[in-house]
Image (tube, rainbow, N blue to C red; front, side):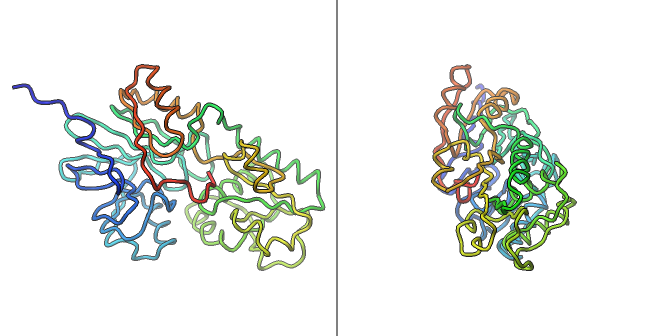
Length: 340
């Protein structure tokens, strides 16, 4: 009798807790506490406390400890990049995702079938983390935060040039930049340094610990000064803060601030207007439409599963190219505060 060909669902199965691997007995980025979790990166919609065991890159584990405390899981295990790890009858490996520091795709292999879970990722180069690496596979499980053709991100370095041009044009105004605390803030700061901005950059207190962590990991951010240690209105300076702080009383001390916001959602003008953003910066830590499509084709996958985001358009695009595709409709993976 001919053995039945293994179905992808036999290896990874969507469940209310997240993607579950029956032959390995683990979940990937579970949204609820489980016995064993493999975690792609440190953002809270993917990395939660309370699991019995967590396997992730060393940097992701350190980020989880910084956010949740040292006892965020019963036990932890470091996954070295590209190194195969045996879990039961399954082999897993972690590969750079280019999303934030420590982020990784997870490849799962069993009985000749290979599935890659991208987690969140981007393909544009980023001075603060390892670049995305394409991993060949039979089935690709991809995010689709910006899975519509309208989302084609401009070069982030061009957006930083716009910020510096505004600073030169309005030297008497503070430039207040909203950027998510993990990944985006450090990327904006590093890109400013790369562009030649050598002056101190002033940061909100909520960014201090993570910026210090990035620097300890070898990411040069230059002179950073906590706003709480300063006096005056910081006219002519750049201040970086989490988006939620931009409308707080905290921000009222600044000199007629130019409000900027770094997010892929700034491509949608209505979102910029709703937030009262004067200088929208389209800088995203997620793949845009073109990069999503490129990744699908480069992996050589014969089947595509699409998770959180704009699922249907990417599913349709893949099907028109002869790739079996379906949406997973997983819940609980919205980017933190919509700051993509």
